[in-house]
Length: 146
Image (cartoon, rainbow, N blue to C red):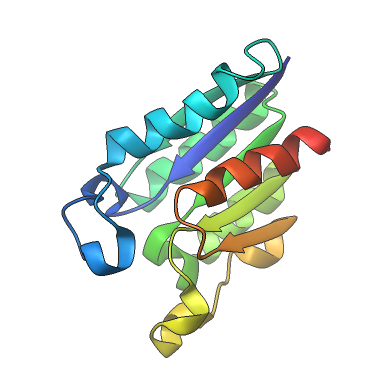
């Protein structure tokens, strides 16, 4: 069984509250349940998914480092706004040497100019954006193929 951790960054706990025109009406808990349900129904013995969220950069790095010691097989990360400036999270992803996929609910390339730049994506094996909560599912499937 593969172990996949999903790490969500700042403000993702406000899904369903913030900018519904961009992020949709689903609240954070329903998005997490949706992701887990996609794999529990089809292959409950194939993957174990654990989901984390933090508004703090250091906590995200702590989770990444814990993934190393827990021998996690893959990581899906939505760094939120940290995507655009956190070289510390970039270094954290690179240092643990665990296949990581960056995910964004919205199409970051059709938004403000600063959102088009990801400093964390080069540390990842792929970046998925603009697919809403299904982007997480696609990312987990990609990691299961590794």
